[in-house]
Image (tube, rainbow, N blue to C red; front, side):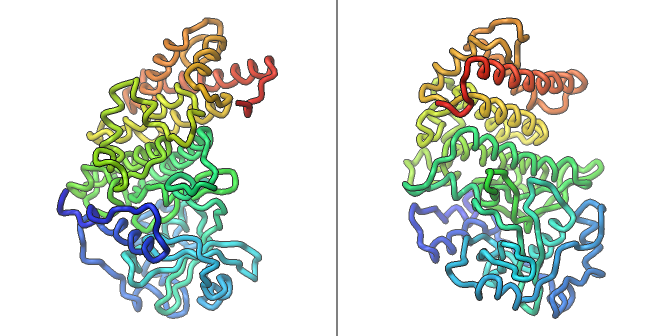
Length: 458
């Protein structure tokens, strides 16, 4: 692993804009330095602002499901986007990625508020990534994928126009928070995790052939006003294996720390590579830590390496919770979320769950935490309520179960859900758990209503 150039690009606590730009470039560079392939402007991009659809249509069919072969995104002139962003003034700047700077803009003709991403011609991504992004988001549509409104390909200018996501990225709300920034509560974290997982599920299981995202990380998860998660930045997305193929071989791209170990070592890419990256982000959500943080003690710099030994000791699990939560989380929910994360980051890719099973587990967790009042004493709070509650996901509504037994049983239920394809029994188990999870939530809400407890009370 020592040959990876991005190992020598540590994060810092406070960075001005120029320093952040340089670090982003180092962080997002290819894991193995390739010779950057560029599409010739004269062949792939017209001089007046449109992609050469006749030549690029075949590429789109090879990359995406053949739902439609027409690019639905609107074309903009550079003049229009310059006017929308007030000539890309600093006060309109809202972020920076591997593609380039992002600006908030206002399209005068439609009244839309948009985000305009401008290609940095000296950056790590180029015409190929621009083309992939336009084609991907023109043909793939899902509530948990960001909406591409249009693009500009005029002369040497390459710009992408997205729906504006007012709450920015997950990274903005989770990592290196300034003192005045509001901390994400536990239910919101589980909601974001479930939404992001649904976006991956669409790419892996509903797109045909499947699409491997390849760049899943907290800075690529955008949030709307209700903290609904949407995946963005599809420039590195890749067509998944089809037929009897187990993987696709490709140059290693992505961000150090999030890449699955087998992909980083061999270049063999599968949908399980995305599942590993998802597990890393879920750990970030739980712990509030960056995946690589050089400001921490030596044994805690790498989040995954630090967390894995703690998974084996139940008494150590609270150490993995974000201190900023102030223990305002259900202990049982913490254990279950960590169970999901540990399975996703399994060293053996075949042992990782399918993302559809992750969605089932996290949807259950998001619903149950949404129905559970937060508490400053989570273990006592959860156990006492669990003992009094007749409805739960692992026992009949008429039987009483001790808090400790219920926690252990529900953790094993999460493991069953994440077990993946194991024949008819596994499928029946998943269906049973989904039904029981719904019943558990209904019983819990009825109990709280009967006792006059609001779901938002502490």
